[in-house]
Image 1: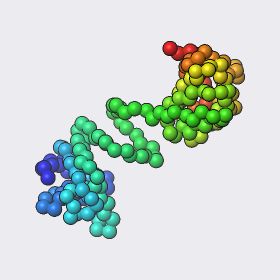
Image 2: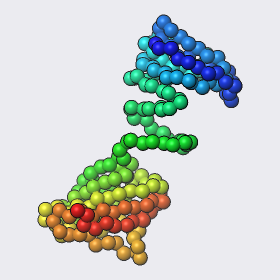
Image 3: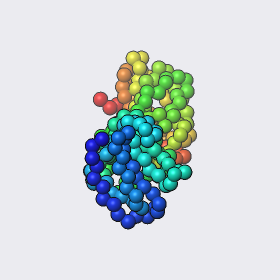
Image 4: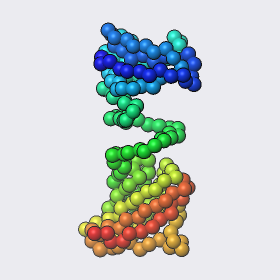
Amino acid sequence: MASVDFIVRNGVVANTYFTVGNTTVNTTINSTSLAIGGTISANGSTNTGSAGYILFSGGSSSNAYWAPSSAVSINVNSTFAWTNTHSFSNTVTFNGVVSSQANTLNQTLTDGATINWDVSQGQIATVTLGGNRTIAAPTNLKVTTYILHVIQDSTGSRTLTWNSIFKWPAGIAPTLTTSINSRDIFSFVSDGTYLYGSFLPNVK
């Protein structure tokens, strides 16, 4: 394993240590915290006899291993890059500049008499109407924004009835563009309960 430079500083969590190593090289820093002045690469499983690992420990009875299934590079001074999927269920706060090159999750909704939209599967959705339809109340709403593309099929003249969870200016839902293959785009701001909509008709 390549060498790693460490800067050890006084910290806030006592009796912890940090280990980077493999079967032949182990580097352990005993301190209350540390700052990493370099790049760490790790690849292996969750034990000290593996090809590579990073070990965070609060003592012999509470070891917690981080062992990526593929090589991961951390450079605290510049970039921490994840190449796989990671889910965060609690609040994550980033201080400084966050640069994202990721795509927003999007989906194609299934056409039917009632159209269902699970927004957790994509904040941006597209549906092609094959008849006069009703759109149900979306599930898994969060406080954020959503976009819906509504496309007429090769017949056209399809209409859409909206669930009462959708709110419109003056309480009046917009009229769809009904020409063949036309596209209307609806944007929504959600408060977690309702979707407050605006409308771009006949986008070409």
